[in-house]
Image 1 (cartoon, rainbow, N blue to C red):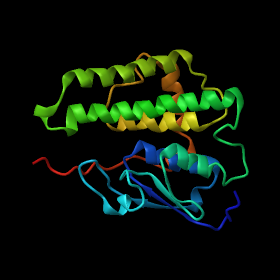
Image 2: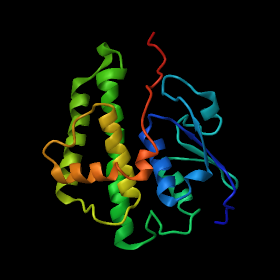
Image 3: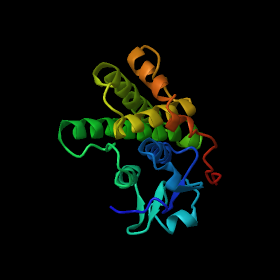
Length: 217
């Protein structure tokens, strides 16, 4: 890919989206954050944002506007695109064991976000009379099981890759939303997360704001 260093790319983002923050942290780690013109958007399944629907039929952020491919979406797709814009070590390994380990960790991180969002619907965002406690318990179990697997099995000593970025931004979002605690009883995960949180890429981005759902009828 041959994008000029002066080219600017528009990233439709959201200040409280773990998926959007992942792409921003990735850009910082790749050394190309300066190429992004970030536009903060509010999106919600119950509150349509026409500007986002115009570039993504799913109505979700992040969305990256590119010169040759138009609008691309899904955070991993955006990160893959960004990984082709710099000349350094690839943050999404191209092949071999390193690739599958990085993508496996990214899959766990993505799942943490998905389960956390579903849990918030069952504990906060959905009207109380429509909440389903067994679903709340099931989503909580996904989080706790994932935390335990990360504590026991994950190798955090590898060079930074997409899995680490996804995991750090996911854990930070769970903490931001006061969802089940991943630190207690998990010293390895706690140490790694606290160290990664001090990286310049994480310090340059932060979560803030609240989801703007349409009031229930």
